[in-house]
Image 1 (cartoon, rainbow, N blue to C red):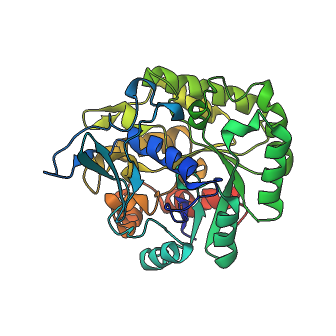
Image 2: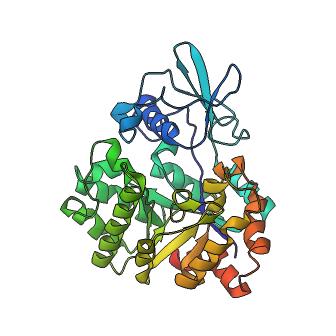
Image 3: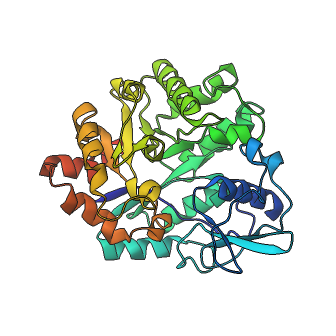
Length: 365
């Protein structure tokens, strides 16, 4: 079975996205678009600009640093804003996302064409926080889609009981298969501390008791980037020491873009410490992060894939795509073909585990 371990469906970005109003949802979108590496483009001449009109760059990890720039959700994958009478846009989604919504029928149709049997829906607040929407996607296509729950990270310490109730409902009533946790979301609301402290203890205990996997999106939270990222890696290691019975997935990869050196990825030694825990797993999502740097079929990443297979093992690696966002660089079929054809150093058993077996075992498919 071919399983995409990292895909998305999302409600209209013109709506509320599970927030109490569109304005709050839009603030999350604006901050995320402001810090993303996709280039800002000036409408008048299509020249490359910057995102300084969207946010105070020195404090870009906080929602209260976004600027009043008439930021808006447009169409065809674009977000737009104005600065001193000059209009700009950023092409975050591929132009095929015409109405800025991606229902499950769209994803399943792409899966049919690319030959993908099942996909796991991931979460991020700037694509909506509603667990009900993801639960509905799964219920409409139970043989094709699984989904992750998401609990607003910034509310967990303030209301641990409420967070636990919401998570329990998402798993036991909505049928979601795990939970996604994004540490940088804490910074948006000024919560700088570690996420393995006492304020999170009751919540993490409940996650353990539910017996669900946790999908951690480990990224830098402050500057300087590399030191911040490695600090988050250490926090994850300490978290796993406390919860050794929980399956963990590091989403997206090991922040590949941060460690590009010439035509190679050179990883620091500490990142391998995570995978001394036998229940720690790693996702491969190369095109979404590196598709703007290296061309298909991206031969530059073969060496690091081999390194991961050697140091972690294929039975703890999984393939994902970031569909539909990845289509700004590669088609869905190219994502499949890359693993099936270009990674010719993999054995059939290794490829089968990476492209479905590993995530299938975690989700008990």
